[in-house]
Image 1 (spheres, rainbow, N blue to C red):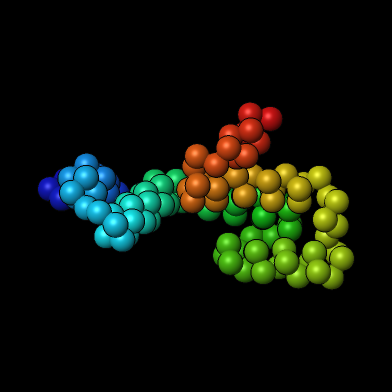
Image 2: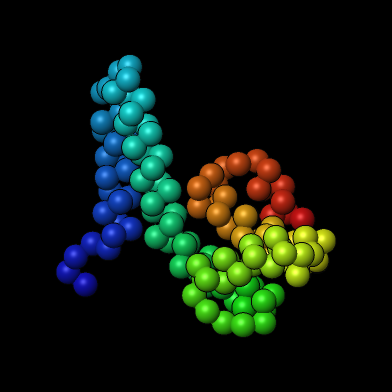
Length: 122
């Protein structure tokens, strides 16, 4: 491959911000550089983990709902079934799906969140 991947580009810019730019910045500019670096971290984790998380979510929803479809449509149907009472919030399979989906999303958005570390250890 003759070009860096999107993930490599994002990581390179994040690394530049954190190691070169931020030490030279002060005040609001330093704060905004930190926000930008954090946003790039989320993008990098989404590029790296997002596809497998979405695939796992899709597989769980397909099993839970008993049908296949686009992830967005399956989530819409899940919401409809919960609202209508067709699927009980007390369902063990629903609880497991929601827990795994939430943990995957936290791992991308806030990987150092202490509560997710405890939940993953269970």
